[in-house]
Amino acid sequence: MILAIESSCDETSAALVEGARVLANIVSSQVDLHRQWGGVVPEAAARAHVEAIVPVVAEAFALAARSPADVRAVAATNRPGLVGALAVGVAAAKAWAYALGVPILGVHHLEGHILSPLAQLGDQPVAVPFPHLSLIVSGGHTEVVDVEAPGRYRLLSETIDDAAGEAFDKSARLLGLGYPGGRAIQEAAVGGRSDRYRLPRALADDPFRFSFSGLKTAVLRLVETEGDRLSVPDAAASIQAAIVDVLVEKSTRLIEQTDRAALTLVGGVAANRALREALADRCRKVGTRFVTPAPELCTDNAAMIGIAASLRWGNGDADDLLLDVTSSAPLPAWS
Ligand code: KG4
Ligand code: ZN
Image (cartoon, rainbow, N blue to C red; front, top):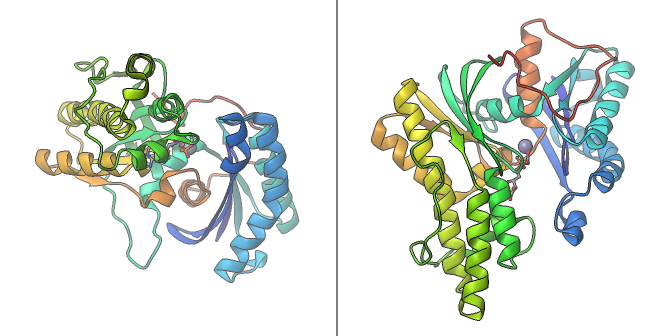
């Protein structure tokens, strides 16, 4: 059994996993704290992690009805992310590893997202074929990675400016829908007409680059020109469709070019219902297996960090108590 900790941004999370089985996955979110500033304030995030980390770990043991004596290794996200936030989770993991006399493993946050579809929440094992493509869409990342095997990743495409989650968050702010924006836009879009407002689909023919900054500018212009006439549901639906279309089209082209057997959809934006449905539908049409984890495994969580650590540890790999944190880092075996 592995104790895993995630604290790279604004969720403090602890999980207990056994292989791919998730025994407990506790997430304490700081969204209510950061809402007053309309975004994550790094110093405030670090302090809030300090307050939450001990109770969150205790809750994981209580929920799984397991004791710390059962822990064989401890894992923590150590890169990339907010360094002050990462340092809290890594310090807690070191304390547990030292006290229990077990190995520690530092996990790359995106590797956690990439392997999140392998997580088994109930009794049914999840089969994900390798090699496959992984579409990672979160607040900080929009990337397609060729996943040859666990630990072997090749970056195929990335955004040249904003991430998809940022496009949701910034557009939501312009519409006055608050923070965080992704879920707010999804909810506001219910019953809205997605063809009401014409919004850009940037770099439509280039599957190797994403760009969302033009969308944000177009939404700003739309809000200014429409003023009080603006239909918020129609605008939310149009924004969501613009983001979903781009993600679906580019992934489809990459599936065709690489001929991989499956596409996985991971990261916070993967919780978006319209995106999940549109990609599932497209994959069915092009004959590609589509796998996306339950929404609670899409947004930041420690279970995915535990799964990634499990696979590395199973290969005899571990770090030591000198483990450090870094704000940016390439994926392992990135080539
Ligand atoms: O993976 P994540 O929890 O944190 C990062 O590593 O960035 O992703 C957070 C992002 C935010 O931009 C948030 O607005 C977006 O995921 N998000 C959504 C939804 N739920 C969260 N975007 C669209 N629809 C959702 N339902
Ligand atoms: Zn994330």
